[in-house]
Image 1 (cartoon, one colour):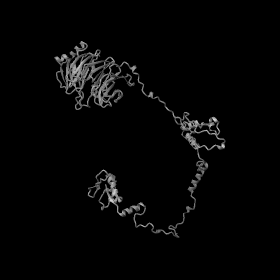
Image 2 (cartoon, rainbow, N blue to C red):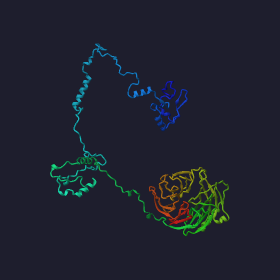
Image 3 (spheres, helix red, strand yellow):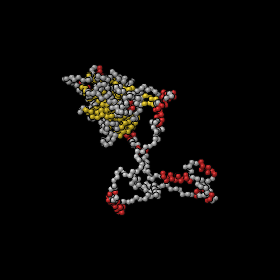
Image 4 (cartoon, one colour):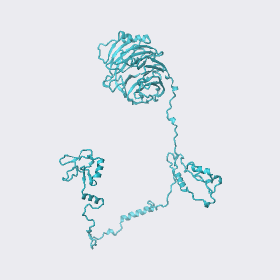
Length: 626
């Protein structure tokens, strides 16, 4: 609603009585009578144009910018005169005479009869009873001492002793923390007008005294000898010294401050010495050579006698751990992304994944009875009457493939990145990272040869998965989160925030309550699952991206391998007492791998029984640290 509109003669702007700042960001400024917008005149003057205008335009001084119409107005001579008069405090109208003779509206002569010629009231002669009562009450109160008449003001000045009244209720007041004002030094012989000759300074001492700083001098003045008291001059530094004394008295602290002296070393947590945490791997014992390209994945057999490795040179090799001898080499049809030895000692099976295939191999190493019972287990499978359609095709290997050790081939729809076994050895899971589809994680059962997709929809790009060592839980790590699913209830139990940008690997403590995650942003996060969904500790020991992490099955050890070519072994003690937090102490940095194509250690795994760690690197070697 436009208020206070101008008369119709002025149709330049009909905004009314509103602040003009409201129209700052608009191209128009108000509306005309037909409701059409009145556009602002185009103003593209900058500071320079303004300056030139000021220099060249003779009417610049009488030009005024009108905000309501956004235009410049040149004032006429009459208007300029009016402004000048108003600035001087004169009347706006020229013809107004302020010194006109005044006209009396009322006469100054006293009339005989007032306007109200009424006789005075009787009550104006009699003293008031109410006032008398009030006065008598006040007199009585003053007599009784209830009301004190005003005291005369004390004209004598009052002085306060700063140190006299300490506050007894202050925190430090209860202890006798009173600091007396500093006392002045009593004058000695050197201050005498006629000091003994040993107090007078020699010429050398006087020169030294003059060169010293005021703080370093023993005496604030030069001792001088005068023949009599009359000859003693006035003390030149008298006012200065009085001022310093006043400062001494005024700046002296009223209370003693309790300083806490903390030894900085006591603030650092006491960690046990690595020597007390033995055994842990310290030296490089064996190097397993034979691969010609980077070794992406390694896995040890449950007995600890054999080691399997998969490499980008399209081969899987089986090694004897103690001798470093390559027992067997199998050519497969692609770069091997992941290998996993079945953790069940009664089954001799190795899962290998390359491209979109997962192979189950029987390496025929170790106990012959275990090897034959494994073959029997696979051949004893009877297909069900109804064949369900599955995401994966299972094929039994025959002929020359069977002689090589191939037992089952699982053909997946997409490239597989990781395989991992369940602790009992019958189930295995495979990961096919693909952000667009919900078919990223599959769980296979070997004895029944069936495959299921546990997730209806994808929650991000899956990096790795793992089975809980004791309970029916399944861990799925996407780029930034780790989700824990209950396989029996088929629901999400927990979602861990890793505070990492991109998870690379994960390992679960054999007790099942702790988890470590390695990430490509050089961090290792330790989670206490009973404690919180955020990391209990963040370790930043590596300088480059972490590629693999692992826990030891029996010893309180965990290891991480990274692109800086080192494996860091840490002591990670988890206590049975739930109130005690895990103890995490880095104990050893193991080096040996050469950095190749900016890649260092690609996988780490512990020996199942000994405190040894295996690491595989981009330099095509596997190393054993004992």
